Length: 574
Image 1 (cartoon, helix red, strand yellow):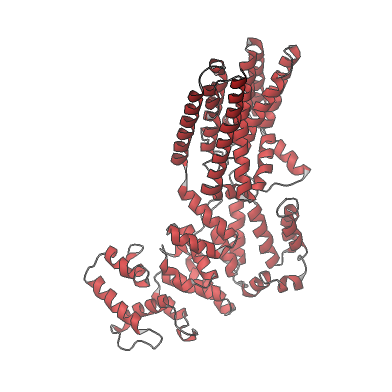
Image 2 (image 1 turned 30 degrees about the vertical axis):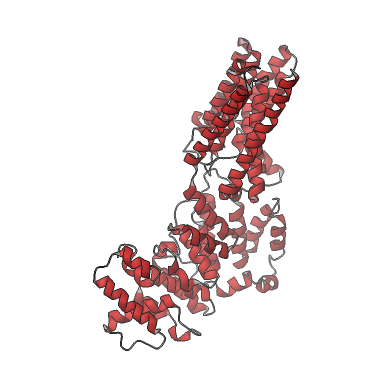
């Protein structure tokens, strides 16, 4: 018996420890930007009003606790650890409810948390789901430790109704866990009746559709799409508890080890299949843009070779901010959508172009993109990232009462309180804002008379207005030239590019574009201007000869893939 107890302690420590470490490393090393993404699309506030508003929704306590934990996702390591501990605690609670398990039975208790891990491969899975399951199991553990009596059954029935309102429909696991332990018909009938009565009453009084009341209001960010993973995990939880009597203290150690390895292997396979690498890549560029890590963006782009418009918008912004706009054709370019993407009716994608507009001095365009992105968040939360940017745009625009509105909310947060207080001190203080290297600069270079107009089809004109109003806005000039290059508007590029104004050598990609227009106009390269290097003329002659001879794009890419000529003839269908 003593030896068995020693083995049980080893299983209770070793298996959960390995699982916790594996989940932590997965989120921290492989999925960190999914963790960061959760934090930026909520605005947890330490206020009674926020608490009451959250609790007023069915499942509000689980949602409030999930939001509280999500604010710590500001650090990927903290967020990864929180997710790992929640999943591990769910497993431990399951094992405690199905006590006296054999090694084989104990290994099977890892199936529900692994299924929940697959759910969290989705960036829109909400942490409140894990809280709802965990609290349901913990409440069941608490109730079954009351001595069997009419009082215990009465508490279980009342708790069923209370937990539904606090945790949502996943509180059904409380019913399952209690009935597996109690194994009596009458309490089961009363608890199920209490659960159903809650659903009907909330539908009649609050107007929620039955589909939402039975699935959960806040388990997933989108309300029109309901993934099955939470309920698959709940079903697995119910099955493990229901069949736990079959796995009482019997069996051999190797059975438990083999089952644990098999469950973990299947879980790893599931993670591979559910892993959204494409979205993780986008979220990486979005995060680095939010944190102004321009050099890190370029380092990642050299490894990833991104080709999606919003990722390239981040890369091109980083190129300009680091003074490397002349090297833009070292990277794959996909047209003007990779510079300033067109607005999309979405809560995520407008944020990168919003950053570009803000840095350019197109403050109202940035404000519009940010505000509309926030209003499109599917679960109707506010975004701490959006609130920061909206406060900044209104500071620059001298709309101090509006800026104060956003800052007062941010003062109620944990990680943004000090930032908000420092900006609150600037409201109405013109000297402080003008002296600020960021906001003062933006006030000087922003669009003024024409900033209330926005027409993406006339983006060249708008960028030209920026340069015209303030020639010191070098970023606007680089974006204007980049826009014409990516739009293959050679006449516009030659018209705006100050070839004679460059100190030293004209950037090679600008020389390449000029040569292309020059050759089309004069049909000769004998009298090229002095700012065109001879080696560029020689390379252009070779390229045009190969292009005219019908050399394949793949062959030309080996020598000329990073030139503007290759982009002009072989990108975007031309």
